[in-house]
Image (cartoon, rainbow, N blue to C red):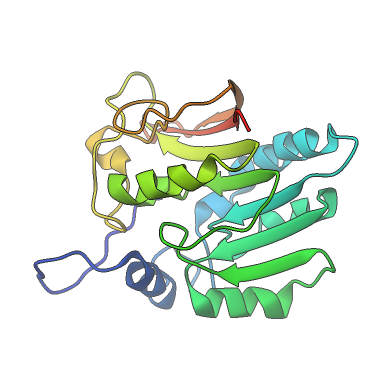
Length: 225
């Protein structure tokens, strides 16, 4: 989802934490009736239901349940359905009030919420990481910092909103100032400048939004660890 933050001119970008706090405070992703709302990508059944289906099948394919780290868990409308399929589920977001809200509304014995800046803070240990439409909002510098940490997870399930058809990947943006779609670009962690090395790649889901609105692509990456 594209979001533009209105602010006075400044020589340096706002920190990502401040940007995301404003997104939720000003309800820039819609639904003014909700205390916290993570946008259409977390609530539109045409987007959410197929995602939950393919990720559930992946999680259920293991004899021993996986531990999961959900980076950028948002309002947890999606994650709440997947918790039951995991051994442990750590849900992380950068907005402290959002994490407090989630703690008050979702409670399971193996579910934990943490408020972290995933670009700067150490990440919890887990078998699998979920990153659903998170990197698309971040600068290349922040993405690179996150990717260095993702090498420690065996599985990465990454969802990105990308243009339909061919495009130039990874055109840089200022964190929080929309997504690369407006530049006819999208995040591809295997392409320059990231060149992320993986053992295997599998497309799990591609949802074409139509009317030149792009594709929401979910990919499973298996690391060498």
